[in-house]
Length: 79
Image (cartoon, rainbow, N blue to C red; front, side):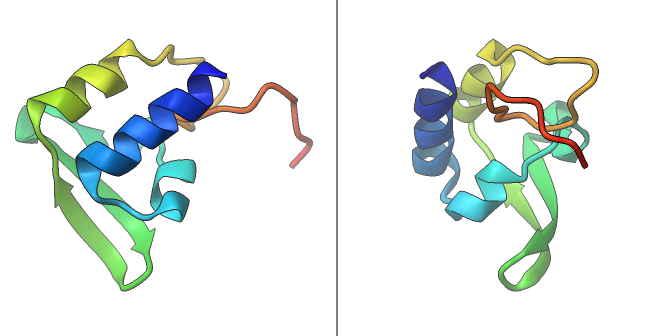
C-alpha cells in the first residue's frame, strides 16, 4: 500500500509520467544535484529537476539491496 502512496507523491512532485516512476532506479537519483537522470523517457533520456519535497519522499522509501527499483512490488519476479 505504501508503494502506491510513494508512487503517487512522486508523480505529483516530479511531473514524471507513470512509466518513469515505475522504472525509476536508485542509480538514477542524484541528491546533490537535486535531479533524476532518466535514461529512457517518452522522449528519450532526460534530466528532471526535483525539489526538496520529492527528495524527502524518496529518502523515506526503504532501499532493498537486491532490488534496484525505487518503487517495488510485493511479489518476487523471475527475470
